[in-house]
Length: 206
Image (cartoon, rainbow, N blue to C red):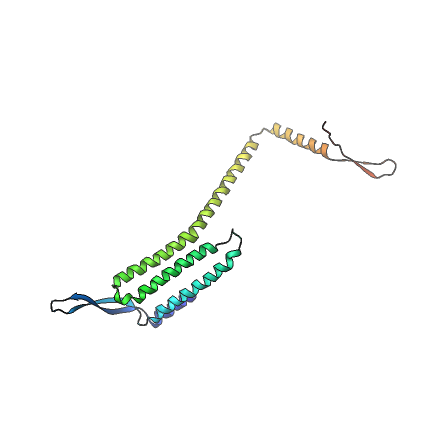
């Protein structure tokens, strides 16, 4: 999609390369001068690419917020607006923290910046899986268990019927047919006019 095209253009136009970063520390050397730490980073020449990536993610969060708001009146069985709202909130918080880390990256140790960024990205993915996908997988598993139990129950019932002897089955069928014949109305023709008369037996219990 658009993200893949953006990353492809970024990699072609301004690919990440080794860059040197100098940071002035408060430590003093033997001559009384301040020590300058030199760090080598892997990043692009222009920070505009990273800024555009953050803006794109912010636009996606706004679109997801609108979608969650529109789904608030959907049937509860298909309503995920509350989960989406919580996920969007966590996404926005983590995105803000990543922006702060990138902004103050020049005054923070490069290794620490990499560790914090990696932790934030991992936490973002884990919370999405835990909040949205894990409950759905659990619900699907419960439905599968219920379907399996109903299948086993049906098989047991069929097994009970199959244990009946052939003579008992014939007797049951004959009794059912006799019951149906008793309840069904009898049709006869009137001898004088020729119209059909329907007679139905009714049982009265006293």
